[in-house]
Length: 522
Image 1 (cartoon, rainbow, N blue to C red):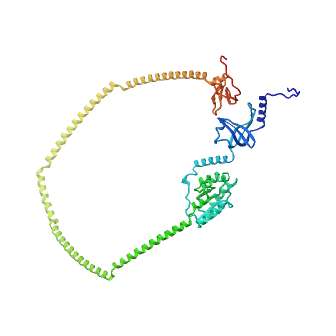
Image 2 (image 1 turned 135 degrees about the vertical axis):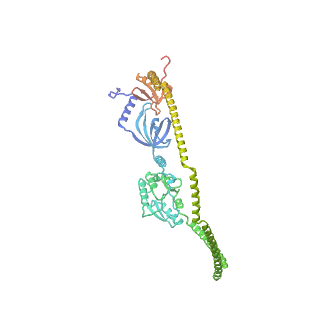
């Protein structure tokens, strides 16, 4: 108790810090704090001060936490951190243990920009095969931009100067602010309407900061551009500015003026091209006329009078008629000679003469038949048939006797071999071998099982878990893994460094307060 007589207890420094920590844990939930990083020290764990004006808050981020962050931090980075407040016992320092962190301001926007760009690129929205060609001579251009911006005047003036035949239809939209992505998406849908009948869309705005241009880095705007069936030209900011809309659009332009140069041909160049083409056509027509006049003069010289052609054709007709009469007379005379020749040949082959010749040949055959005596020939044929039948019977009898002898010999050999006896003997050998194999397999399994039980017992005896069961602990340094780096000597840790003790039923996180070497003999 204090000497002034009050009843208030006196606490040690450690007790006071512990009491304040309990109050902080009970009264304060984890908070989000924003500020600028200063005095960054990184050795696995991160230690830094979060500064805003004259206010400073010390922060600690364990390695198991900071390894989840997908961005780099350095002194001067503006960040938002979340964590619980505590007092470091060794120094009595008020600090926050950070469990979440994100970049703040433009840094966060750029991180989101890179994430969306990677996702859309993997999805294929930037591939060249999806790009639609921009019409060379646009008739109706839908201009999507702010009606009060300088881009409207710039685009209209450049189109009037370069290609006044194009009709510019303004589709007003917001180009900056929280509601700009919805406004741009709706403007693209209005520009696609058939009443507007636009053949190209120009999405543009003037320069600005990264935050000002962030409306064109919205995923909804990017997908609306990709789904638009009309070619889209994107001209956002200045030449150094690049947005997601530029990647998705069918054509990207550095500035609104450059976009007009890409979309519209130059009127002066077209006029020069038309004049040059007209001159070339005129030269070709004049050359062709000169050539045709020369051909006409040549044909006039070669052209003859029609009456002379009639006379010439009449003479040719008379000559052809004379040749036809002469050919007809010659052909008729040749046919007449052939008829006379055929009449003579027909007379020589008269049927009466042929019948007479056949009768003479028949008479000769009758005389020869009478001299040959057919009955004698029939008796000889009968004897030859009987002899052939007798020889065939003897051959069949001999072949039958030979096959019967071979069959008896085969039956005798089969009786001596008796394959069923051999099969039964082999079956007995197989059964004995099966029993031997089964007994050998059971013995091998039993040996392996005994060997395995012995190894398991050995492993359990030397296992660290068995050591923990006997009341010991394993001390490690947290490094993000389940166990961490094992501490085997006091030189492996430093003061104020966090450690973790693994016991039988869990882990105990602690911070090294002091270390002392064990003297020899202890």
